[in-house]
Length: 252
Ligand SMILES: Nc1ncnc2c1ncn2[C@@H]1O[C@H](COP(=O)(O)OP(=O)(O)OP(=O)(O)O)[C@@H](O)[C@H]1O
Ligand SMILES: CC(C)(CO)[C@@H](O)C(=O)NCCC(=O)O
Ligand SMILES: [K+]
Image (cartoon, rainbow, N blue to C red):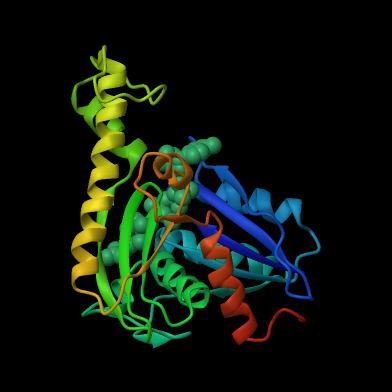
């Protein structure tokens, strides 16, 4: 069995890929106060029979080195996915392609598979929100990075030295208290930002793009966005599956 794993800044996500190429439902675990490596080791403990792991991460070199070490000790074959100038149908739009987040690269790979020849905008609503445009021929035009929903609100509260509070309950444009004013302000701010960025990107694209939302806050943000956004919570798992298939390791 192959495990597909995405280690972000806040959460570990994973799916099982069986020999027939089917994906199990994506699961997620927040790191909380623990290091990301502890969550990864818990995952290995939960799947003692796993032979192969395809991993995309946005964490440190130390995390990557430690993951390599634990996988080697347990006899798990590890494939770490990196951003490259061109692969799996994507041509990076970055001047320095290896500096593009590997999660963004995998999201673009998956979006290309989903959209056929249609251009796409991938909006990954995680700790950060990333918005990336890709043409139907696989040319990544580039993209933007914003602080995510939770992080924007937490950063404000932290800077206010604990005087402020936060609530995402019952968002409203005329909030009647501090906690809802901050939660709703960050929410509607990001909804407007996503719509505005997409509108600007679309003007510079060859055809109307498929707009795909993913990440931990995708469903929440979708409920306030205009129509025309497709939520695909496990988009990266589909990208990792395609990469696994291309490297023919589903049966190993
Ligand atoms: N149960 C949960 N625990 C923690 N965060 C959650 C949960 N459910 C939704 N979220 C939201 O999901 C966000 C994290 O999403 P996601 O897992 O996609 O990010 P990530 O991959 O860790 O981050 P990034 O890719 O930006 O490094 C959090 O900021 C939070 O707002
Ligand atoms: C922006 C994040 C944190 C989103 O997960 C990640 O893709 C990352 O660390 N990227 C590296 C910087 C870049 O993509 O330009
Ligand atoms: K992510």
